[in-house]
Length: 531
Length: 98
View 1 (cartoon, rainbow over the protein chains, first blue to last red):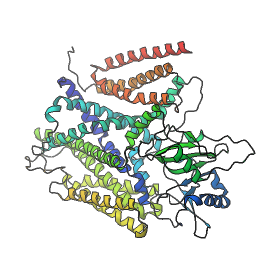
View 2 (tube, rainbow over the protein chains, first blue to last red; view 1 turned 90 degrees about the vertical axis):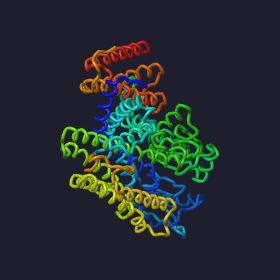
View 3 (cartoon, rainbow over the protein chains, first blue to last red; view 1 turned 120 degrees about the horizontal axis):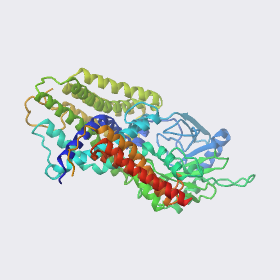
View 4 (spheres, chains in turn purple, blue; view 1 turned 60 degrees about the vertical axis):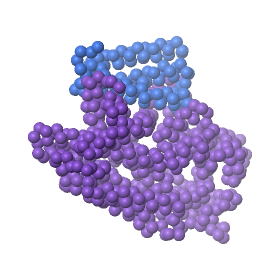
């Protein structure tokens, strides 16, 4: 494919400057995003065990509800019936959450003891996994959510420019360079080949991520503009999130005043749902009484055959008195075609389709993306260094050194910080409050950057990889301290095993003679890569 | 075709044109299409969600290709001209339909 030389040159310059500006933010976003694919298992893993009697069977739910409401009338306002309790939702009945929730929140958990008496515990949630998700959403910065969202949008726009320009740069030599990874020649060639190969083969993934991130960053503002352009007579106030918490207020049952109707029992609700939507697996029944005193019910769950709009699954609005489906806009497999297509955009970002295989695939793609940004930065450094050597400099100039330290420090600092947060979470009170977790992460992150400014590049890489590996190995140890072996679930064991394997990978990378270089190189080109 | 080769030196005027005028261009298309398919901008309706999703690809496409203009003035001029045309079309459609 032929593209005029000046166009290619211009886009190459744009690509490298845009890349250098946003590369490190994107590294953190992709690394934390890959970990966030496992937000739920990690949260279960980090949640400390609660001393509660075992969850009740479906038939005993009415008794549990009745006893809870008698003892805690305020629980009626908003309560959630959990059909399959997990360590992070350890009881069948959860209530007393704050009204608007962003992420996990403190809640009361009710269960029945063997003699039928009510046992209630109130517990704050583990926020370690949610923190990593926030790190992903705010490209690794600590700032208020609104500002962070806007900043993420700017990075996403730069990212899309980098994608367009990068593709244009690669296109002319596409056929010649497609499978060529010249590891032996020199450092610049190697980083260039790795960077463009990773970028090219995951281009569809990156296009999806760039476009959806721009949308996630600016959807509120776009809706406001759209409303101003089309609304004319204001019908509805434009609401916060377009893809969350919207249908909840819409499907209240109109009950004539003075007449009391008892809602169906949870077992009956589940039975009617499975009859109306076969294949859909209900997970929680979310009751809400706060909208004008009418009881609204939302059933969340998933259907393995369909993708779900949210990262955690889909939901349906249900009439709590008859069990009839009221709203299927977000119910997987029961959406109208336009809604299903819209859902697919979200699904492609969250990887919430196709089960565990796709989840792991997305995690690998995310890590590969993070590595691509690292390779891009290294490429920038190596070619700069080469130019400086060519013009007679023996030492790196200050700006090359600065960027080199920042690249290694920020990327490996993020790796070490995430591992520390996860290793520390089970030992922290309540499995990690947001403020504690934030302090830990940023302390580790900043000290890693500081280490990179003090040590030489090769040494810094080796040290930080080694530290990250040790911290990752600490994850199963701290988990086994917090959770007795008898209460370990299968999903926590998988997290432990993955941590050990990942730690081993980091360790392997740290102790290799060519630490910091992605693959083994046979010959050492004259002095260029010796720092 | 073009005499002077393109360069990335005058990136700022071109990129700012792409950033600002790309967004307004995308929004004008949202306005026109939204009027033609009678949606009221309620974020719950699929039509307005599709229109919202339209903004990101158009905006990023303009932002990525605005470097092809030879000078910043041309970028502002041509993109501004397209904007004026589209916004005039929007106002026209709006006045016809109301």
